[in-house]
Amino acid sequence: MLVLSRQRDESIVIGDDIEIVIVDVRGDKVRLGITAPKHIPVHRREIYDAIQREKKEKKAQEQSENAAEKAPEKDSQEQSEKVAQEQPMKTPRKQHKPEG
Image 1 (spheres, one colour):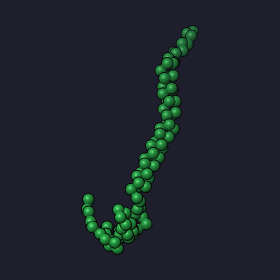
Image 2: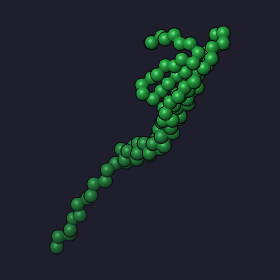
Image 3: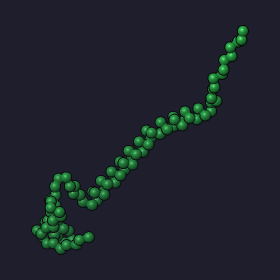
Image 4: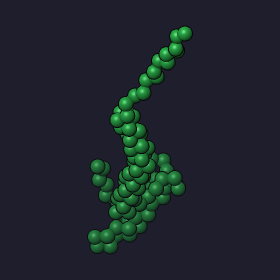
């Protein structure tokens, strides 16, 4: 981690297009101004963590829904195989033609 000291109205530049400006310092609070391109999301840590949790929960829910949709297909296939095993196979009988 890079640790920098900055005073009010000083800034930090990240890459070519992100700038963090120290707007104000009052006691133990620092106000920051952040300039970044619109395609780069900027969130407070607690908001970012909440977004990640929601994404993870949504993905888990979608996976369980997909598994539930596939389960009936698997059950019906297993049932068909079980029925096929329980029923004896019918072999065609030879037909005898009467001689004569």
